[in-house]
Length: 148
Image (tube, rainbow, N blue to C red; front, side, top):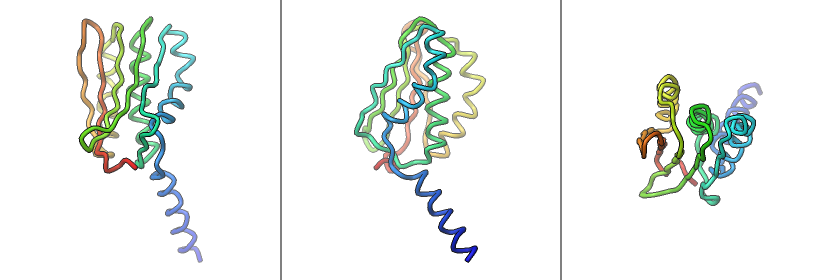
């Protein structure tokens, strides 16, 4: 009996983490959690993720990666606009977090190792692109095979 209960619990837990979830909703939840800080920093977060894009990946790891990149962007800027885009292109999911303000790279670099390790658990990668002076885009990509 205990073995059946354990298997059922494990199956339920695994399906909970793998149940396809909207990237738009994940970003929206993270955005809500960062609202007090973004108000304090006079920064607006715009969620431009595709509302129809769903991902069947470990929700905790996915939220950690996106949330860490997003919170770093908010902590490291002020008086700016942060855009979050999510799309599927060429069998990959791309999540872009970009800002139009002054970005302090030191703060992101301190936590980038743990974010990269989490991204790799989803077979993903993180790329940082320097834009116009001070602006930056963080791109998290993962195989669309994790998408539903």
